[in-house]
Image (cartoon, rainbow, N blue to C red; front, side, top):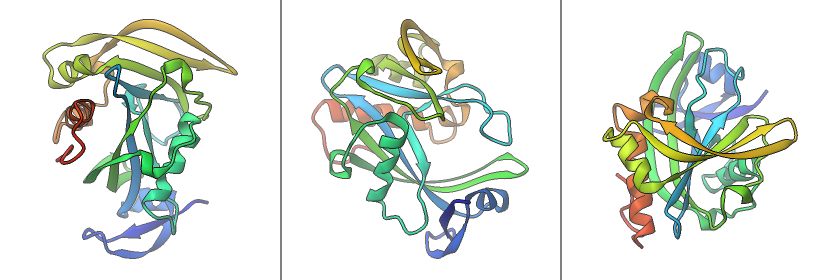
Length: 216
């Protein structure tokens, strides 16, 4: 059982709850998320998640690089542990660039309701795809894409872009060139508040040297 803090819709703490129960009941809770960006090479990295880890069918989309729930009692900076757990990288919260808070609610399945206060960040990386030692069972691969291509894909001016894939099978990781299509992105992140586009634009501003007002 994993306990998480729960809140009302005004982000006021009202107690704790088991994570599975929080999703079943649709309780408001908070999450940590980060988009990894290579500022010099103008690359962003997306994550491919392992199938069969949810009570509903989750397609093999190219998701945001890092994401997870805060445990009960954790502070906002404590969420940086997700970077180590999912990517295998030792990073301090001071190295991240907070983007802001996204309040979102969606029903993914009858027993899985997401009502989240999402704390978003940019995670600057200097290494290449081969330098990310991801080993979490939840992560089966990473996708590196050019930032300008990523923006065009998110805004819909193109439907496919070049991509470099890192894919984990058992204990080995293989690397290959390929293509990423718009259909492989999380549909809800393309619609509504256009989360992919907003994150990629924030990364573009960051690569240009901007450090304030990066995100909505």
